[in-house]
Length: 300
Image (tube, rainbow, N blue to C red):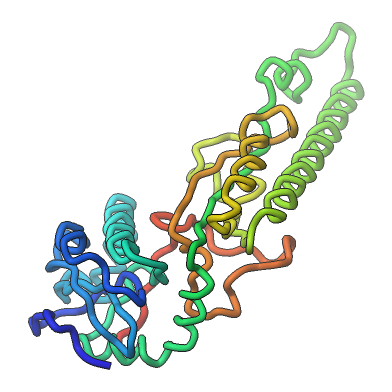
């Protein structure tokens, strides 16, 4: 374990982006932009591994100031994008383990010790993520046609001679119809997940996002990530294309993005790498980066 060969000793904090075995290309690292308030990205060597870091001012990245900033949506997005740029810069020559956004240390020595202490886990992760990428898939219920909803909903005009009993009957029928539609959509979302898992090395579920985040009226039923071998990417994307094109599962709408750096499968705690049980407890409401929820590793 050794300190960075080029790191300044200026007062402040160290923001860490990702761990890799192979130092990134120097020109690519120099061209990359991390947090706009910090210095240039650099490599910190720690126990045979490379940690891409950036010196950042303590008055902006201290716990209280950072918490306040990350509570503002525009600052949260800016920090997430800066973090993603740092991770991308680290990933130029091989697999990387992205660290949680806003992972901060009090200097090079503290950061190097933290990486060296996790060497075994990090080596396992780097081996696991080599030649693999992440694909994000979101499944929403299909939105009901406005005309049909208006004709059968509780607010539909009363028919001539129709009394309160008829109104309640229509409300009850509409409720049963909605429950049936949701059940069908949930079953189709599970079918999509099961089919994609057959082409993936691992899969994990994040908590479905709220309407505020998705901008859709229809509920999100599945927010999943899949770790896919590069050699099997064609099989995975062919299966995915059948779902995103629509028609095979009319009760849902499927959206996908990728390939991504495998954020969802690069956790320092390797026991939480992936959730083999599709019915296990959901994860936080967020996407992998710039989808990942902010976190801060307490400096020691």
